[in-house]
Image (cartoon, rainbow, N blue to C red; front, side, top):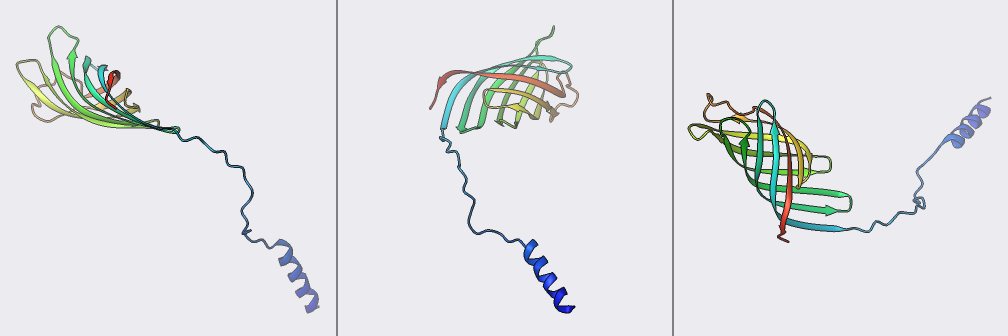
Length: 169
């Protein structure tokens, strides 16, 4: 009887036992033609920022874009000015950087909002979608200097486009 049980166990283990094969399966890999492109341009920036107040944006940027197969990464370093659409003139000179890819992006800028009598320096981190030439973002202005000056948006939704003026490389 012991012999029968032993034989049964040996046959069961040998039938259901599996191991990894050392020979890789034959697969046909599709060869993708790698296309790497690196470009830089000087751009005109136009934009619109809104929440409680409406601001237009105009300025200049250096846009750097890298294309590698299906991956696109863009960087935009810009100097712009926000102009408030209201009965009283308000300006906001701004310097910032934006880094974006096909999955989203983030950036940060510093803006000095002024009505030519008083002003406030703000830092605004932002995140959204877009690459170097286009972005749709949400940001929050942190007032760093004049807490009483609040004639600008704390929360900001912005739409910005950069139009190439000439190629740098």
